[in-house]
Image (cartoon, rainbow over the protein chains, first blue to last red):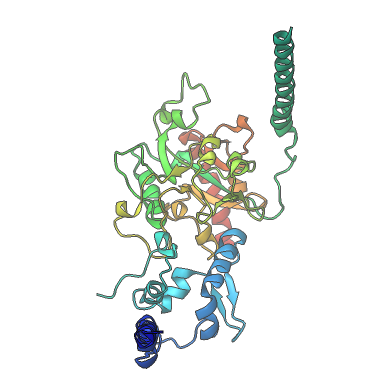
Length: 129
Length: 286
């Protein structure tokens, strides 16, 4: 063991360099970015279901609405939270409040790199002049 | 000897495969006439049977009203206009002359007022629709509750079997993205996308809100009447009971549900006062 110092020193240096990204992130940690969604421009405070449920499950709810309307002709949705009835329509109900597609739908979908094909056919509301 | 034995086995094997394949094919095709025999005697499903009566007596030769109906429909449903480009043409309701509309009739000496008359054509919403039988994804089906032949554009994969199956040419295919060919899409109704088949839906979205089909709304004087054939008191039933109406290619067994009243306009002039009098008498009593 003539060069123990060099070897050990080299190993320590190697470990430090290799793990530097982890150290760097641990020391300068910033919370994960969360896209900020703008509230409905018409000031509506209440969605068809609670906010947390809609955030997690709106895609399933929309698929369910789609199948009920198109395939069974059923158009009324009764909210499980407040008992109000809604027209199961993306353009008439959802977009009536969330008319800011760019600041609402797109912001989160872009962040998560998902590309739902809704807007291939459904017409997005016109931007306010 | 070996060579002939080998040849014998090859031929025997091929014959077996051929026989098996042939019988499977015959089983798959079925006996001729099975499809017709399997038809129910009555239209399936109870409920309503929505139908349309087009009163050709009230349409002019200039095609003005016909154009108005087409525009109203295509505007309401974001149907793109491809102009003279017939390959890409999308149509829910369109016009052809009378002879082409009823092309299986032989009009050798057709009544003069019907010659070349612009006639509205649309999906017949058949009681026995061939298009729904061939759809591999159930993207089109006959609604048992009201007889509308419905489409689910979410589910259409664009195989175009239904276009081949429909004897009326009522279905169109989106070869290109329709959006650039729409001036200003209605936000209320979706457009379609490339690779999807589309057709008239009897305006089921308007019916659901208590309205009438867009082409019916575009008419001022009951030129097109829409209603329930299962209701004996409905306007369509009354019209069919009082007038001679024809349908397109009824011999195919599709049971089309769009009727065309083709009586002589002079009969209309003669019967019109008689039809008005009872209503006027009622009004007097009230």
